Amino acid sequence: MVLETTDIKSITGPLLLVSGARGAKYEELVEIVLSNNEHRLGRVLEINEDLALIQLFEESRGISINNAKVRFLNKTVTLSVSKNILGRVFDGLARPIDGGPEILPEDRLEINGNPINPAARAYPKEFIQTGISTVDGLNTLVRGQKLPIFSGFGLPHKELATQIARQATVLKLENITEKSLKRDDEFAVVFAAIGITFEESNFFISEFRKTGALSRSVLFINLADDPAIERIATPRLALTCAEYLAFTLDMHVLVIMSDITNYCEALREISSARKEVPGRRGYPGYLYTDLSTLYERAGRIKGKKGSITLMPVLSMPEDDKTHPIPDLTGYITEGQIVLNRDLHRKGIYPPVDVMSSLSRLRDKGIGKDKTREDHPDWANQLFACYARGKEVEELAIVLGEAALSDIDKIYLKFVNEFENNFVNQSLSDNRTIIQTLEIGYKLLKMFPQEELKRIRPEFKEKYLK
Image 1 (tube, rainbow, N blue to C red):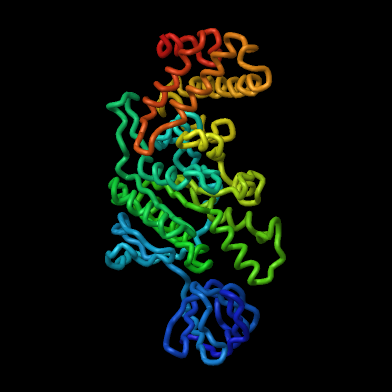
Image 2: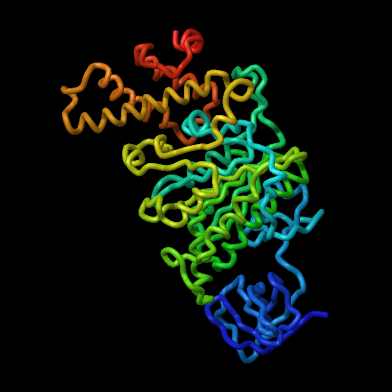
């Protein structure tokens, strides 16, 4: 029997408080029927005896407390999944927007999945090639990792996210040569665009179609003018889709979410409408818990072939890394890729700040039988040279280049060459890990070999001669 009530007590923004809802369930879907027979969807947020607080998936404008009917549907938000979901584009509530047919479901999955049990997690250790040198070489992405991109407003994070989604692949590494780098065909991308503009939506969809990446991808597009509650559902739909592809179809899935800041703003808007006590900068006190329910759904499970790797993109307000969103994200994830505004002003793409970026699982995904045996030494030496070069750069500003020693001048030149030839690459430049290593060695040849103290002699003999 379907529960119905017409006793609407109040309407505040996207929230409805109704009476006569005894028997309703938390997260249950609700249908609001207006006097003109228009139907709108919502979900139950809170229940107290016969009172229910309902959150609308659409705007509340036009709903009257006098003649609207509230119908409880006795089901939760679910995602219809099948093998045919690959290559499709959906809106933020998983409705097709690509002109294709509805998905004929093999299963219907609830979108509020659970974080992976820590005892069931398998340790991430397989290398994922993104084609971006600063990621593959120095801040390596590992299968099952959570590696966010910290950006700022106006920085090219949407281009970087699209490029990674287009180029990323799990590689079958045989003898570590160009010819032996083969793409694993059981690799898919789930892309969730959260609170973006119509222009950005067209950019993402056209880029995926133009490059052919759409055939192995699933896109969920939530626009900025869509209701805030839809932004809460979009990342959960994307992760539910990823869980199906990874743990039912045994695929390796890369999930990219852009922009998590818009998701958190929606949380703040809804929390304010519910008159909850605010936390830091007005965000709800449960922001950390809420973000962890998303991020911790990524990973590998013992006994399962598939995996979920997560790269959330977030814009830091005023480029502030101590802002609650990047701050809390950093506690949950295994590192971060940081975009730098000064590099962007120099015309460098992608403007990845090597010194601020970090992949805590890098050493687990590189080395012998993974990328190449010299990769760890190579990465440590590049980091050391770039760090020393940045110190010399500051010294040159104070004292002038004439006061620098000959070796300091080499370090100063290295910084410029490193940023322009290693960090900088075009949108279409898809570098293999072998090409990335070769570019790095070419830069290291600027130094006398006695300066390269982090590379073992056998690797110097093999790669620096």
